[in-house]
Length: 238
Image (tube, rainbow, N blue to C red; front, top):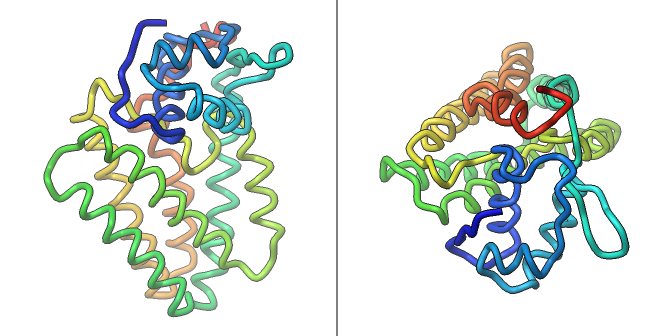
């Protein structure tokens, strides 16, 4: 694993860095990871590495290996496609129900705040490394607000279970720090989809809102060419 220097020594930054290393194949399936060498390679302390490992384990990208170590899990294209499709279906269902009854003032304000923050990130016309963590946090808030607004916990619980599969969770979008111009375009598309979802909710267009959320689930996979990177990182996809 070649040395990489993230701009911020925090768990979110380390998670994003390790996730991209897995996606790119620089950390291939079966690779063993331990806190000290990973921290040294990333130029950070062990403090943010430990929770980053746990987060990536919850996302289905790492598995425990021994008492304190982890290894990169193997997964197939079918695994990734199915997990993304399930999330899109479940989020679409939640949003359809929300559109049918109309979002509350609090829910709409929370969604609008996320969109405004996204506009702020994209307004300068390019990304800096700190934008990756900011986008991940606002994107999670946007999706959580939509799902948790449902009157039943059934959909949220089903999504939580699905989030343990590779690249299934809303905040596991893989951003390449080495190609921020391309990642800017990916986030620009995602931001447009956020706007369209809110517009469909305002208009009470339930079928359109559901379709938009299904499509939105694929933004990292299709526009980020995730499949090609995942194929290179997983022996089951070669």
